[in-house]
Length: 157
Image 1: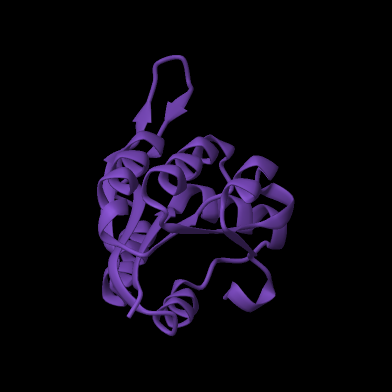
Image 2 (image 1 turned 180 degrees about the vertical axis):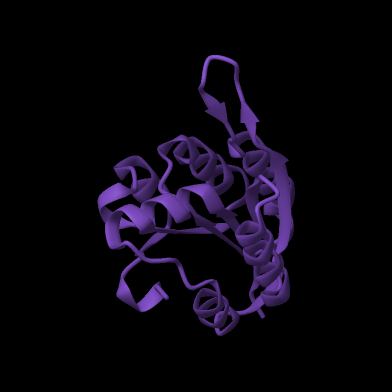
């Protein structure tokens, strides 16, 4: 049976589905789809901690589905800018788990992950899949994955 690891760049998926469709991503539907492909051995969702009730409820729903939710504090700088980025954390976790699974599924449209997917395939031969909003997913990320699944109406609430 296939051993599968899922990694979700929550902020990227939230903002791209909202921008493209004005709707939310259906994580339960994704879980059902992936579960039919094999055993989900790792499922991590990377989000920003802002202590807002709606976000806490959302993170608890992710946990109930089966995701390990990793949180990083939201940083609001004095100059008015903000930071909340999980790219390095996601990369480290994928590199660490790659040798122990048959497939890695990444939910993100961020082209910064292209090099990561190339490395994973080159070093481990693990199959890689990407889910992202077509109009907002970097071409380099689509090309780096073994397969790409555009997020459409079927994966939205």
